[in-house]
Image (cartoon, rainbow over all chains, first blue to last red):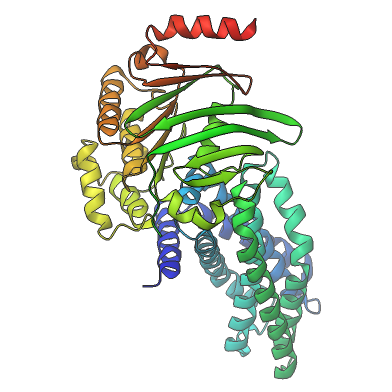
Length: 227
Length: 246
């Protein structure tokens, strides 16, 4: 196996094993995301009908908030016993460590989305499953873009005293394009007759954001983590 | 690319964080088959110096030479980026925090780090490490269920799993009982005999008395004195620090 892929796999497997043992991040993330959706459902759904594209907006708000929580907790875990230092001390490609952490967080967030999407479809009477492949494409590309930036910032801020405040303050403005593309792409899926060309446009935009964000993160992770 | 070195040379190394100077003008040489002690009060800069030696930080000025490979501060171009991974493969570090995942078992921790360091048989390396830590029977228990002494033994073997040339230890005796301290000292002497460069920062002067081949005394980020094979370490430390204040 290629050395880069081997390191990615080691880090992902380790992160998922730790999560399976503790279930700390998945429980808190799902609980928080479901709470957000329920609050909005009570506020915005009247007589079984939600306002306009509310379902799309709520889905991405829940993903963004839950994602911030997952990012914070995942790196807090690495900080507590200084294991992030141990990872950086290893003679492994540091970008591979970044990708490993990124994949681990994407998997956790996708698991949260598996609960969120049916819940929103039910509470908001939203036809989210009318185009399952496009829905998967929008969610995966949006989640990847959001987590690509989030993983970099969470790793950078791991030693900052006010990291819990700084992470959302830095992350939300930069990931606004991803959230907007995610919301518009999801809203396009909710149209009575979804226009595939519009959905494809938003997914392409998300792929472009992912490419830029992942490339920048791979490029900057090593220098940012060295000092 | 493989790197090996028999000498670590620290030349006039300084490190500042913004306007705060953590270290200034530190120079010493540590040789293979020797244990060098970094001694000084809290905030003296010992942990910063260990982080510099581990390549986790870059010096603001001065040079750290691992044999022929030089890591240079702001004044010059660092070679670390070229030899980075190969150099890190020769360095082991045991921090004040133990760098272990408490949710994983001792075996899983050691297997993970052995694989990360590129061991061909990570499971075998982990078994050997557990045997050296005298924890083979507890290998499948989560590290969170271990006592401080047991965790420390696993952490030391984690730091040594790739047979590093340079071993850096930051306060390794904290929270250990007498038996664990004795076992750690025996292990450090073994490492010295196998040709490792051991650099150890500690406050526990009584337990390391007679252990060091060389001691570097640091106060407020400055090197006050170096001494070969220091005897009566506590009294020596008091006298050196009193001179440093004067």
